[in-house]
Image (cartoon, rainbow, N blue to C red; front, side):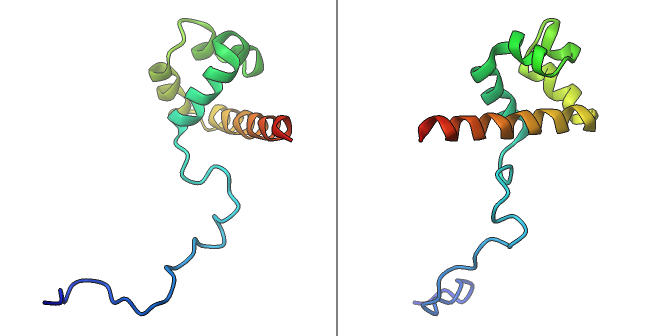
Length: 95
């Protein structure tokens, strides 16, 4: 019996990602995942040197940092920028 609500299989590949997100390395990455990766790579001390904000320097935790970064667009932009820099450096190191 065929399910009438099932999508039709016309032999075509599924639709590709929209062109606007196809080359965006941040697409699908949560702020928490970025923060955890940065902390693992740099550690809180070096992270606070790279981005001098209190939530990285004084009693740092992922939870408190997320709360601050979600409310502060300029700080989130710096975290995203440092995350992209870290990815580029890691990619260069693999070559």
